[in-house]
Length: 128
Image (cartoon, rainbow, N blue to C red; front, side, top):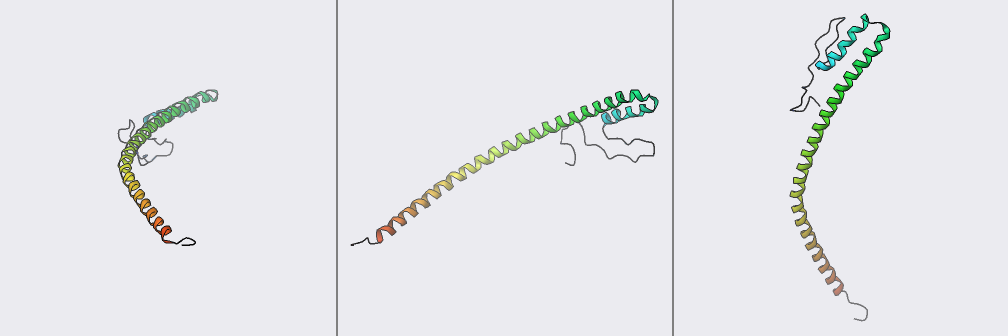
């Protein structure tokens, strides 16, 4: 998957810019960058408050992932519906071909039956 599907609410992430030492790279999604920016607060907080920051960052990142999954499933669901519709139309086209193939097969079977009957009639039975 090279990028997001057309019409998606969130464009494909940009390539990250080079990062200097001590800088955090950007994720390419403002919501992810905002969540990760909370980690910059850690040095100024007592260690006992770190878990609440980690929980908040985790919650925010999960929300972004859930949103992306919902978008992906919506796009996959739509693509699946489009494919099913295309398959239905294709099946309709092939069903006419199948009907004519069945008729051809029935005609061949009938001809085979006739030649088999002729073969049986040509072989004289005992006492003939």
